Image (cartoon, rainbow, N blue to C red; front, top):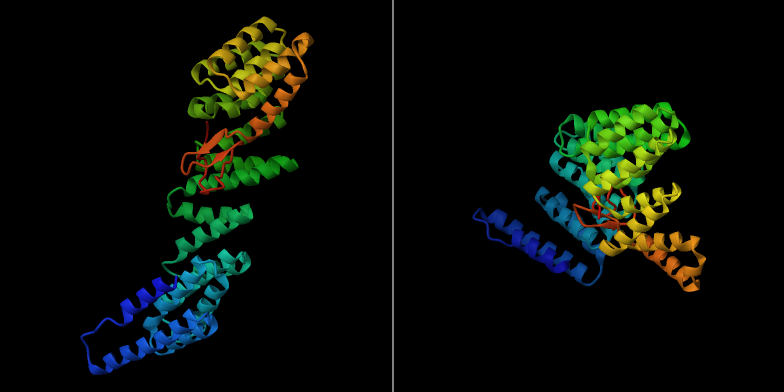
Length: 376
């Protein structure tokens, strides 16, 4: 970090300038002052170094950039306290230009975020929203902050501003923020609030699978099976890649009226179109639950032969429980082993960064992208 700072400073301040003698003398003064400050840094006297650099702001406003660079280097090196002190000292100077002050505010807010002081960062970002030319950046930073804190109403506010100004991906993020509010509302039984937010989410992003799934859940909670069925068919047509997430809603919808054959046809058709372990297990469970034992046995044999998986082997062990003579303690241990392996298995990956997860994550924990998790 020190070598990078030294190179930057001396590259800027020791370069000859074709101007008058007075300015040449000033450059020499700068070089000596910065050499003194660097000496403090090299001898681990950080407070004296910071004071030496900060004093120069009163001499010439051009040195603000160096203070900002120094603070950023400290922050990137994990020394957030030092970065905060430098940027706070900058803001305390009365002779900063407006752009310089705005830059210092932005850097100090980043320091606070890195330090986990979200309330202080929020205050500065709110101040930045009122600065011409800084508003969009500030709202984006606030949005990141509120998402990290799971403050979804505030996140909606910021995402709405970005959406109204046509920022890329803002519609996707805004729809998911409304989904977060709706999900909490559904869990607490507030159907009205959930419906309002889901309608907004689908209005903003008609292709939002998450909003569709939550709306199906709402329809099922209010016994509106016809609407749930219609929406499920729409989701399957628009986004077939999420078929594994449609199995449970389909089961609730079709089996509510004992449409066992319809549900079976649905599973068989989807398996032919997009074969997956989840669909195979759903079919096997359906066969056994409806006394189609031979059909289950034949399909299981086919699955284990063509596309063996942890899920299929686990089902085979459970399926054979009806024939105790074929089981032993070893089989029980193997079943537990397969279950443990399944819990650690990656079933979804982020198409943006490659992050893997056992369960669907609508907001990737690694790169924070929305709706990028796809089934393996």
